[in-house]
Amino acid sequence: MRILITNDDGINAPGLLTLLNIADEIAGPRGEVWTVAPAFEQSGVAHSISYTHPMMVSQLGPRRFATEGSPADCVLAGLHDVMKDNRPDLVLSGVNRGNNAAENTLYSGTIGGAMEAALQGIPAIALSQYLGQKTADLDDPFEAAAMHGVATVRAILAANPAQRKDYRLFYSVNFPPVAASDVKGMRATPQGVRTGVKFSTEPHFAPSGRKFLWIKGGSQTAPSEPGTDAAANLDGYISITPMRADLTAHDALETLQKALPE
Image (tube, rainbow, N blue to C red):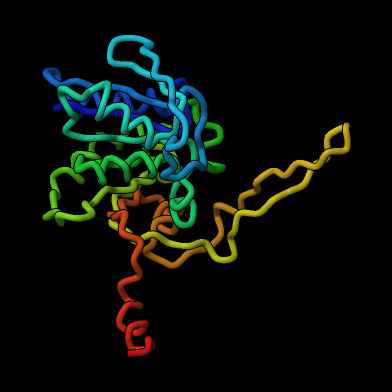
């Protein structure tokens, strides 16, 4: 198997090394793992692409490239430049430092990389490591992902549901904020929402008097509906959420149509 890996934490992020080890085992001794990752951190860029300016691509080693772009840019670079003659069979994005469950999903560059792969017709999985008090003292905070990542990816690939011709599935995986030995199992979950959690801004003033705003997140342990991704993670389970890039609220279409004038 030929695998392309990327992330949003940057080419030197420790989670990318965890993902490389996962991908190496999935690819097998006759497979190939290619890395195309951002040259610097791109957290929070979602599915953005460098549409209005070019990006530099640099080769750092065998099958290892960095781009001055987003994770979606990296996937585009991998598919249409770096690996254009031998496209990958699978794209893996992550392992993100921190969870991409619930509302975080919408902002995540890790998710954005997997989404772009799906739009390009390539099977894709985004992997993220929930962090918390129980991971703070671990020698490797990515321990749960490192220990259970291969089995999780293989389980998803084995499921192999039928694909639509328009927006194909991709998957968001979140490993729980516990030691690897405390992971309880895997759960297929919908995306949740943490009660009362919103991003906001916090003002700071430079010595010159100029005002700057930091983007501020909310509690990552706030409650969410039972059975959703964040709830499963906080209960010790790996969450696996099937996703599509189709943003249509299909449940609202009929009601809207009835309300429209003839």
